[in-house]
Image 1: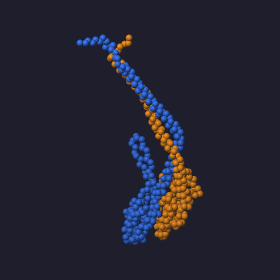
Image 2: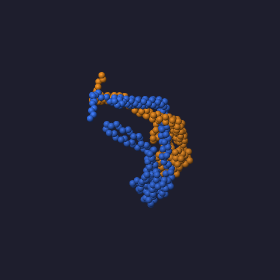
Image 3: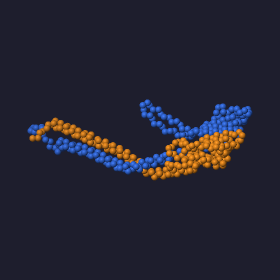
Length: 199
Length: 222
């Protein structure tokens, strides 16, 4: 015969069953669901980062053609500046000859008498850039000329080459001859070696 | 008066309704089990979906990685090249045309004054970088990037005069540098103290004076 339980016993059974059920659910939640959710959330984070990385990579790869074109254009521009304006060494080593060849026609045209021209070895440009194809060539011109000839000579240099700076100018009057003041001009010019690596 | 006799003991009483406590317990158990399984299944499916998506992205990255590295190297080269072109542009644009200044000085210089010496100097200065102090024991702060170079230019004019209005003439000459075309380039033009004085030369007359005007140009940052 089936044992009959009292109402109190039944209540106790229900309470115990409920507690066991809660225990089982808690166990499954803690041991299975929580680690699985943690892994999923970690994967979601990695996924989001990777999606971003891939988008960035795709963008960068897509820009390669434009970048190459731009580098080519820059190289062409640099090459033009080098050919037209940079002081180049003549006979392999002398920047002095290179600058003289450029300045002499201007001096002759303006009546400026160049007594001496000294070119120092090229140094880095004021902002040093590793691998830059240009250097800075400092030259000192000692000459004799009137105020007007000096001004015209400077104007000719400045018109001839937009990359030449006059970094110092001394004009001392010659009391014996107002037509031949003593002039010292220091120039800073961009210079480039004979062989230049492309950027 | 009616008499009702109940001979069934209280513990022998059976509930004859369809929704019995036993049924309710079973139903609740089934619902809870279903809910737990649903949550578990949902979490499992989401986790698997993410794993699949992650694998797909990893595969994509594997394909792109080498191209991306090349693109990055190219972009770095482009940046370096653009910096060089920008430097050249700045170098060209910051140039001061001294021939213009010489023309302006010649035009405005008073006839009563005679210029004996003109000296212009432009120095390239790289301003010192201020490194912030670190607290004792703390990691030393990263040094800031180097400051851009600056061009600091000055002009000095020296001359003689024997004009009776020499003082006014020299003051007028100084004023040249506060007017067009110097307004945008010269920040200060002064006659240094003691610079306007009697000419110390032996053969100088009582009216012979020497003067000096010093000009400071606007600092140009490269």
